[in-house]
Image (tube, rainbow, N blue to C red; front, top):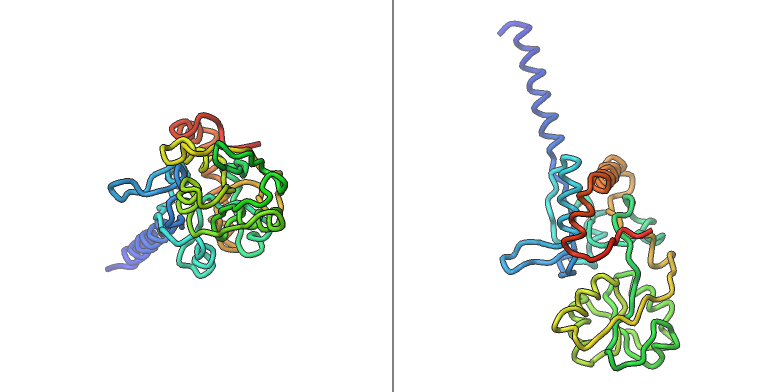
Length: 257
């Protein structure tokens, strides 16, 4: 092998190596607990939902090899900081508290937090309207933090591991109300299981707790990956794919102002 051949082979090897590096999978963490219509397992065991479709569209737009990685919700940030996953895309609101530990992309949706209760109840989404009631909230969520700040003096707060468990107890009359994302709750209210209940409206906004919308979480300092997600979000917003996916699941825009 002559000198030129050797150089050519070395360049080819470097090109292949760079290609492999570029194709390194991005492990995107999604809460293992079902959260329809955003993410859940269908009857065949496949992950489906609006957020799954949006994730796939963003990753395709930026040629990222994204691997969906289910993680228990209450361990999803430690899994990111501990490098078991590379990003979080699981309806995680961008809050000041979380931003102390991880970085976020731009938002990709923003919906209010609502109270749902029995149709026959006179509950309203305020401390006065929930006085003496039992409110179910999911652990390690902005809704738990909000309830503990605003409703502790008025109501009993019962913490659950999943929203499904809350919905079941609400339908069975074991709790009086739940506080959660309005879109997730609308899916429940529209189902046979949620026929008992209705949306009583949004709670008073508090951006310091409820955040500034939902974004992709990445490790502190992982600016290159964060910008990849930002570019992907922008691309699907501009090319119409975001709206096309949204119309499959919702009757109105959920991007927010």
